[in-house]
Image 1 (cartoon, rainbow, N blue to C red):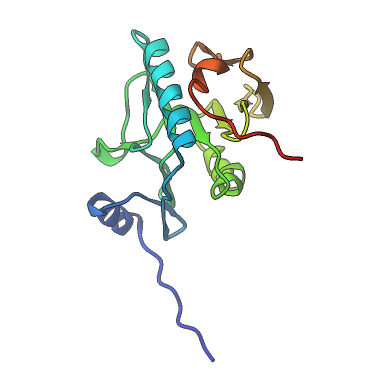
Image 2: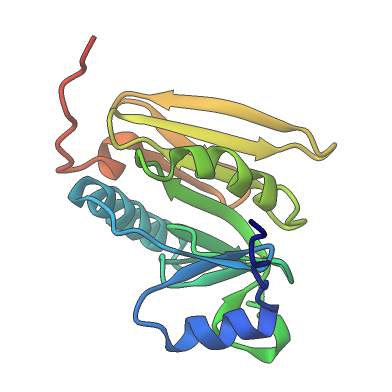
Length: 193
């Protein structure tokens, strides 16, 4: 039995649909993917991180954006990171003020439903953004932050920050945040063996 070919959306079709939709969707290679809701731990970590970045970046050339801000990776990919930091003059795609195109730092709070995507395809997409210097993954099952930093030669390095006494240092935006603040009031589940 022959299958019907699936028609792919264009960039313009995706943007038109996403702007009027009741929920956000990411766009990769002509397909839209609905964003799943997050847990309370996810929301707390994301909110704490955004708040700390907002305070740390006040008065600087950088500013954080929350998960409602769409990032254009290319004409074939649009995503909604949990937190995005842009520095300098905010440039947007095609004179649209709702699409960021030059993030310096991107943060994703991992969940069981998105971890493979965040570590895999999404990170591959992010690495194509010339302005991106740091990609930070925050675990919600333990106090653990993984920071991928692009060196001047283009090589990405990994730094693990583990435990409340560690500090997340992001030189590209000039901030250092103790993990205890990012994980403030977050109930971490007990470890299972």
